Amino acid sequence: MTDLSKQTTTTTRNTQPRIKRELSTVIAMIDIYCRSHHGRTTDLCTHCQELQSYALNRLLNCTYQENKPTCGNCPVHCYKPTMRREIIEVMRYSGPRMMLYHPYLAFRHLLDGRRTVKKLSRADSKKSITPGESKP
Ligand SMILES: [Zn+2]
Image (spheres, rainbow, N blue to C red):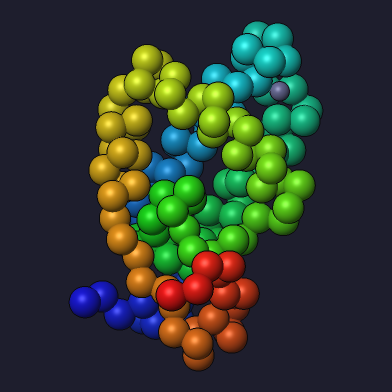
């Protein structure tokens, strides 16, 4: 049993391995997506740059930190609707391709996706986040 309340109180700004891995995954996914949809060659197009910095920002502020599930399994919907739609689109496209380009990350992501995560207690959710949509 992990105590999530501990994690939420320690606002660790230095990135933990779990989050670092998630950062690399999301960077790689947006990279793959932009390359095949926006004809990017070296840098991301401005649109994807925006999406990427938004996604990275959400990750760095993730309530779960080291206990983070993959974003697809997370009960906390921390993205604003427009960004959420876009990142879902990116992941839907790049997800299956990750095995090709970044097998290690894809594999780790698969494992991380099997984590189960406890919902934060009511007291915790009042502090920083809105509770997830799904009911227990
Ligand atoms: Zn792009």
